Image (cartoon, rainbow, N blue to C red; front, side, top):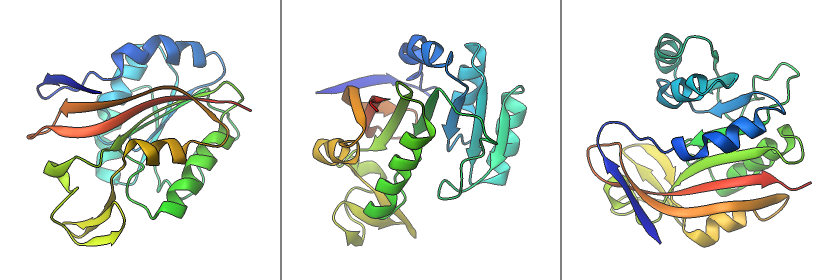
Length: 199
């Protein structure tokens, strides 16, 4: 069932998950994948969590470091080794950052996230929904099912079955909900998932 989020420039999706992240934070820092300019990073640090974050864009990393001093920020592609330097995170946050890749690569990234967590470690992620028509789920050249070339860049869109398939092995789904976010100029449809490494 779809839950609308309040419209506006902020997107306070993390607020309800902070108790879960604080609990997971006892096991290690939070790793944020695709931190952008640091809006979520600032909220995580403000909640007293230790943060390691990375993004592909050097400009975004510079902005995030200014916005959220106290975090450890790296310029990195998610397909490269995570910048953990031997540290094991207690939780991973990946908001709208896992949708650029062919299905096999997406599965591989999800498995690398699982392997970097201890048993009981948490993953919070948001994924483009298959009905996200304002942001590319229709009207663009199809690379493969639910994977489109949107303004020159590949973007994947997920239905519930695909989300469950992505996290079928080694994960326990704590929550999976369809949302409509008002963060951007037009409503954005997405899936929000909270997961736990089960082994």
